[in-house]
Length: 281
Image (tube, rainbow, N blue to C red; front, side, top):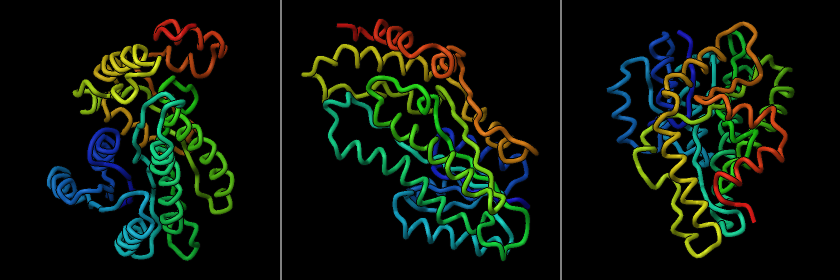
């Protein structure tokens, strides 16, 4: 049975990946931070799911998780690693606390490298393992190519993740390990049930307060109409299994998101966003 590790599986995209992969006959090791989530998901997904309890920023805990997976593999290679765990820290960059910015980068970017370093030997960087080299899937975002205002820290982490993924893909060719980016747009997850998807309260006394509120309402609306997490799971499954995967897959419920990220001139996109949020001087 082919084995895949997915980080951040308690809800949302990670949960959708586990659901699709388990249904597809994979053995999935999924990371969570809370024992209660581990117990819940083990009951939900059954014998082919094994929870790993670690925070992606905790090197010792991640290493222990990799050791647990290595024991289960019994000398075989790991088929895939899906770096999904991440957070979003909103706020205007001029007023965002530096420790909040650093936390965003640490979780979304440094955490992905910590996990990659720990599991790369199982994917085939350790040539003593039996089987074909595995693949790494990095869960980025349309925000990894097009940065929205007030999500600058998040986009910085995702732009960085895409650059790191490109370097890794080229560095890991020596081992036959491929690296593929999956970049979703809005995804319908439980976070959108909360009206405070973006909390503008810390910035209420800044000139950005009205625009932040417009962005919050837009994110809630877009999220509720977003892609099901299972759709991202299917894309991840394809990235792991097709003979010749693309280097990047973009999935958005609204094609304009991809158009804004890849085709329209930046000044045009600037003006579109500024008009919608009321950011023009």
